[in-house]
Amino acid sequence: MSKAEGHEIESGKLQSPESSAALAANAFGWFLERPADLPPPPPIADLDWPAERLEIERQMRFPWNGGRHPWLDAAVETPSHIIGIESKRYEPFRDAKKVNLSPAYDRDVWGAYMRPFTAMCDRLRSGELAFTHLEAAQLVKHAFGLVTEGRRVQKAPVLLYLFAEPACRGPRTVSKNALARHREEIARFAAEVDGAEVRFAACSYREWLANWSGEARIHANSLLAHFQP
Image (cartoon, rainbow, N blue to C red):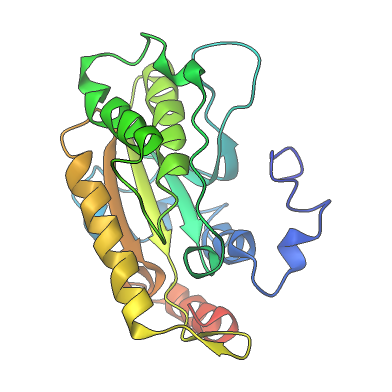
């Protein structure tokens, strides 16, 4: 993880009590030496599991040199799919969401099957689409990186948005209305990019952890107790 653009280790973010990176690292890290045991997240259970490879923090480079390239919190490979995971914990209920999509993304390199994402890029820039809780611009960048990586490794790309639904953030309660709005925004984003070369899917940590069994169930219970996602 020390190579990641977010500098999670050096910055101390990984030790932060609000760290989404720590949640992802602890959830996926348990399976690093046994990726075949990774429980499939419910919305992508139809893929060709079991997993063959698992990484914590993986860069998905754009099809050009220079500039900044996205890092996903985790990456999973099955025989025919590459799955990039974007993990969220408190971020949907904390930060103002900015749209920073440079003209570089307008290059004619994505292909016809990425038009739902290029259209999303345009509509976010223009303000036609706006999200309060969902970092849609970040997801667009991740999709562009994933489609490039998928073509490089010759596997179908999938972007999984894995999110926590905390009851509170410090002394402040996270309202049920805020949680519901977040889910509504996820559903709206999913509908807008449906049919793209990068498949978009989303589920909560609790929905995923509910499916863990055997030894992994003990670890799931520890994650629930410690991170309260």
